[in-house]
Amino acid sequence: MIAKDNDIDLQVDEDIFRCINPRHPKSFFLFAGAGSGKTRTLVNVLTRFKTDFGHEYKLNNRKIAIITYTNAAADEINHRLSYDTIFEVSTIHSFCWALIKNFTADIKKWVDKNTKESIKELEDKLSKARDPNNKTAISNRKKLESKSKRLLALPSISKFVYNPNGDNYTKASLNHSEVISIACSFLDSKQLFRQVLVNQYPIIFIDESQDTKKELIEALFKTQSIYKKSFLLGLFGDTMQRIYSDGKEKLGDELPEDWLRPVKKMNHRSKSRIIELNNKIRKDIDGQQQLARVENSGGHVRFFIARNELERQVAENTAKNRMGVLTADVEWENTHSVKSLTLEHHMAATRKGFATFFSPLYQVDRLKQGLLDGSSPSLNFLIKIILPLYNANKAGNKFEVSNIVKQYSPLFDKSNIREDFDPKDILTKANIGVEGLLRLWEDDKEPKIIDILLEVSTSQIFLLPHELQISIQRRRSSGEEEHKDDDDETLLAWDIAVNANFNEIINYNEYISDNSNFGTHQGVKGLEFDRVLVVIDDEQSKGFMFSYDKLFGIKALTKGDDENMASGKETGIDRTSRLFYVACSRAKESLAIVAYTDSPEQFKANLLRLGWFSEEEIEIIN
Image (cartoon, rainbow, N blue to C red; front, side, top):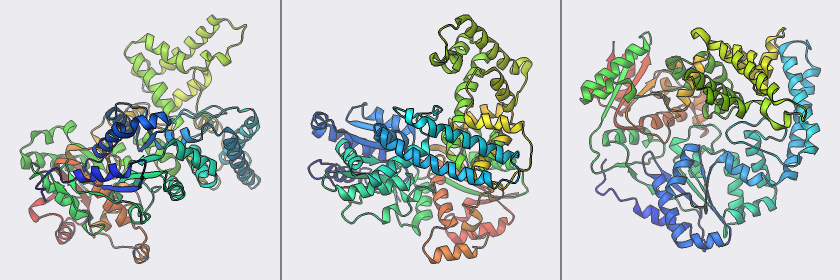
């Protein structure tokens, strides 16, 4: 499907601009599918707003808040808006912190209540412990001690602190989940807090709204319903691209009746064949269809089916080589020119060489987000302190080594230096500590993460995050494990992960920094690549949230699937369809899909019956 005019969506910009008139605010949800140019629309309407109403906003000390899903998206929008001060562009965590940070007394009450509840739970667990000296009991006592210290320190805190990049170590620090929970709680229960929000940010745009935490969305919906004449929400998103479970389901279907619902029809990214596939994937889900640009006809799509017993790298290289021939594009044979997308991050970890470190942590739900966005304090310690130190030493840059130590070592923290302390003693201790640490890599040695942690713990050259401190203590304890709660799973996962070679941290950092040719179906939302290889491998994925075998009819639906479908609840097929759409819609020029199965012929027959691919577009790799 190709558009007759590339500018058919210009009216959408005009409609949204009318919505954000401060005299007549009207909330809206903009449907913007893959490659539709929603960021362009967002920037266009805000640039016009600045021209017409910017001076008035500055005089009244008001701002438009734009909440993005990633720091990279925030940086891009800020840049395109010329960093104008009437626009507050930030991630959800930074935005929530900006809202709550001056409500110190209220935060104290919330933390006090929340901490007391946690202490009671830990005391209950300890009272039921069969062995007070096993690892679970030791961990719970350590956590109880930490919570109790926090409670005791609470009255002395004059101001709370928070770092959205993950380093929240001090007694006055709030963690990421607390910041979101506090903001939602205050919006839901405090009229004054809502009034402050409305006065400061009469307009709030939320990018990728389908994946924004549903608690915050619902709290903002409540606020908008109370202040309809003075506060508007502008949601940008595509429910077909909802990936994370904490996003609000059926967001586009449950909007207030007086909201505007504009739709962008263009896909400016992909060739027409790829857009045709995307349209077929979502046709029976929401019926939304896109058009290709006038000049974007053509494109290549191929579905390769491989037997499960085939070597993965061999099968995927075969597919790339075939794509090179089919498209007459030699870049398909260049590893760094093809973006390979796996279903699960641990599949990429296996291919990229950081699975020993990554896999145990990724199996714990509460660790997943911090593992993927780098917000975990323990990961930050390894990536932002140890890895740069290693790189500086490897490059022979002693000046940078010294800078890192001075920046992060508690030895140089003014609050830890006594008046009678000799500065030479500090330097001597720091030198001994850093030399002992760097000695782990001498003579091309490859230390394990635990070796590094033990050295740091001994020298105290750096402050270890709480989880890693406990991991070291647990190694010195023994005893049977009791039943595992979520916290125990966290600690057990770290017990395993720290046995990985430090080289895995290097590979992991390349992966999450997007400096790798690997990615995941869900991790590349918003990105685009000339050549995309989508890997479908239920056998390796180990997950239960998604099932390509069910989507393509290789595996029968369960009783639970049937019941969920009958009651209108979300199923694994729904989630997998969305994931497949996100992955396929990243491709600009050509798209290859490699699926592993025990039944290649049946798989091919099911694909043909589905009607998404022609027979010539499906190949079986033997």
